[in-house]
Image 1 (cartoon, helix red, strand yellow):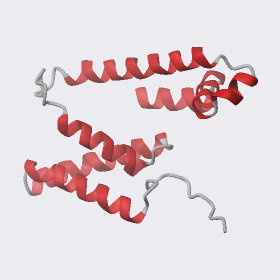
Image 2: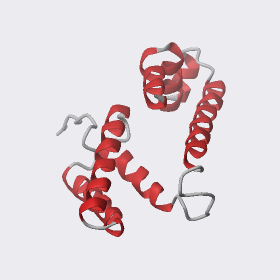
Image 3: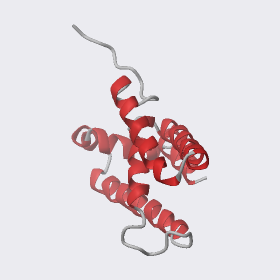
Image 4: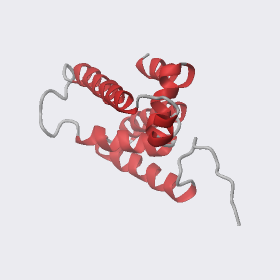
Amino acid sequence: AVMGALALLFSRTSLGLQLRAAAFAPETSRLLGVRVPRMVTLGWALAVATAALAAILLVPTELGLNPHAVDLLFVDAFAVAVIGGLDSPVGALLAGIGVGLLVSLVTGYASAAAAPLAVLGLLTLVLLVRPGGVFSPKEARTA
């Protein structure tokens, strides 16, 4: 639900357009009337709020408040972001579902210790075949 709300925010609203413009070309955005410092502050606030929500949802699980509890989650999150494409929220969502299925299948059929290796293997394969991510748009080649 949060992912869908953020995708709608960034793709369908004036605020989302201003946030993306301020991140992509701050000087040009400033010349066009976007308050870039305000958009940067709002972007960080959205990031912190999303991270806080994720932490609130993760702490009650079996992970607890161990300093090393989320190490493998960072690996999975990085893999999902790269596999889905760093510029594609829909790709990140679909890659998250795919990596989750891969982890479940490997854990069920092999062992829980093999799941991170499978994720890193998939990440390596995607980086070799399509370095920009599976769902990132192809860039036109120029001579």
